[in-house]
Length: 336
Image 1 (tube, rainbow, N blue to C red):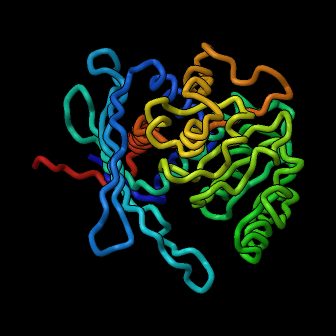
Image 2: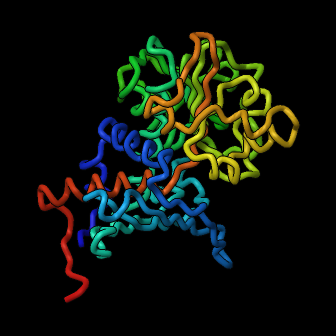
């Protein structure tokens, strides 16, 4: 078994390469070649934290040489700013345990926070590749944390982004974030006063916040835009309102997960704005060519990202395979 650290994850799985890994994972998900129990959360007594538990399997033993199963364990803790900057630990700390399905033996223990951050932004990039207009050049990022920065890189991997608008609750942090993105990417990057200002002229919008209530309204959306909803992952949280859901061609990563935890969709259903049939497709159904991603240039498309264990397992296996080829990571024999 290999133990693969955060720095190795970052080196072995750049977001551009991960987009194709997500394509394969989501096609398998929509084809049913997975086992994906709905994630569970366990509160940590006496602490402002919880553990997320995501087991799953990908592929079928005997039919696929790379069939695997495993579990992701993530500790989610709200961490206060340190001197006005995010805690280096981040809000998610964890690991992915990867097992071989044929032999039932552990292959790797892989640092989970970077793996999750990369595969989440890569999944949004896949949705953008399949649904956003090909001439999309203007990006709006709502939020200024790690996923905001990751999504800048992910969107640039699939569309010719030349201008970036940023909005965050703290104007000073938003301006600092915009400056850092401009310096790193060489793209014109501007902090905006409101979410509506940020998305006014955007082709692609990524919401990457910890908002409990909607921060973006359907009234602010323009024809032809594509939106990736990334931040809210529980049924009681939502980043956009029901009008935004109603106006969009709404695509999810996995229908059972969406009906359990997609707060934006569930709110719209409860309000009587839409029904469950408003889900136009799973992203894997678009990736495999069964359903169109965008049906017109003026259509508003929306991808709700919740994340599924298949994404973690596919990423983990790609990282493990790369580490195997070059002999990186720490190899240990658990059975000796």
